[in-house]
Length: 118
Image 1 (cartoon, rainbow, N blue to C red):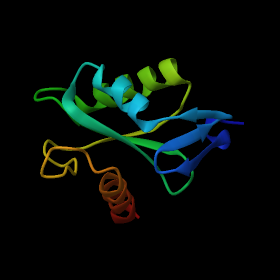
Image 2: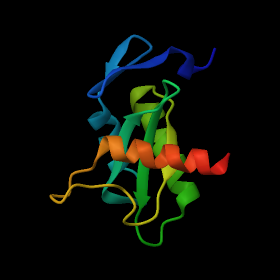
Image 3: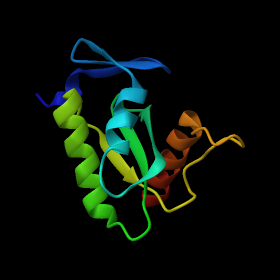
């Protein structure tokens, strides 16, 4: 059984992962601490398949593959949550006019990528 078999989302504000309540802000904070992640450039959200996704914007010059691995490893180590990491281009992370990340819009964006790949 993979760790994602026991992950489910209960509300837009939190996820239940293996019986524990996990807040997306905690996952985002871990992503912010990774080398190569642009400041404020991460957002966590529920995926349609009841898994957890994290979209990140790499800092200028950062290698997206290394950023993806660093974020996934940090969240797994710190929260015991296996996430799917999506690396976006600079400026692609949806934000409000005040600069806050838009969780629902980020989820829709990565889901549109998946549909385009089908």
